[in-house]
Length: 325
Image 1: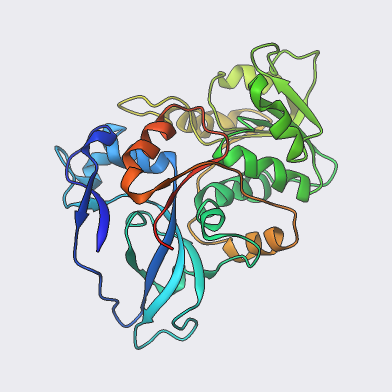
Image 2: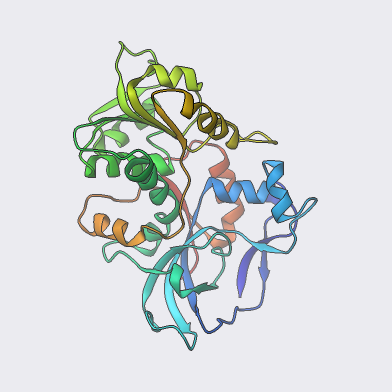
């Protein structure tokens, strides 16, 4: 089968389209014919081997083994292991798989898979798992969002942000999105009540406006600045900040964790919990409350180009790789 593989850390230039062995599912696994793969900054970190501490797990100088790119996928069941009971050939599924999605086939443990939302294409479904779950966990679980609360999404036009705006509205919040001028109409179309152009206005000093919750998906402000924009008992959640070589996005998360016990506001990192909420998200999607935003779709042969575009940081919504018919 064809797959996008890397054997060393580096830019998208190290990605190769290779012929590799088709996986064989064990008793508890399902063989999926991949139809689309969703790309995330998560994939960038593993491809680059950054921040450096993660190499203690993946390999110091190079990956411990040849790795197939791609953290999210949607596809059709090809065959099932002997102990699998929930799926059968032909079923359409989606999941967060961590690695291996940019390939014609992937073998996935049954417990990770969920039925694909009926009103989405395979490409749309592949855009959902990691980004939408991160948004949901930040808002509902970590932030404990309640109807009527004022919620600000910093980075509202990105992969997690486009889901966060819609999920916050579904949870009953009054939503303010922060994005660039070119993305204002997009964020409004997703349901944001207010939109701030970050080039024209700094939300941390904006006319003394205070928010019950800030979901920071950019990390371009200090904790002190963001706390000024929070109510005294508000919640600040962050997915991280810069792409630094040593701590990268973890640095801001560490700071929030360390400071939180000493202030009245709750400050916390926001991290994905793979496949925990895909059934709940499917309900929101099929009810028309959440729709994936896809900026560009690339064929499998142009996955390196897709990753280069992802690295620009200018993606509106998600980048998806189309794998098969």
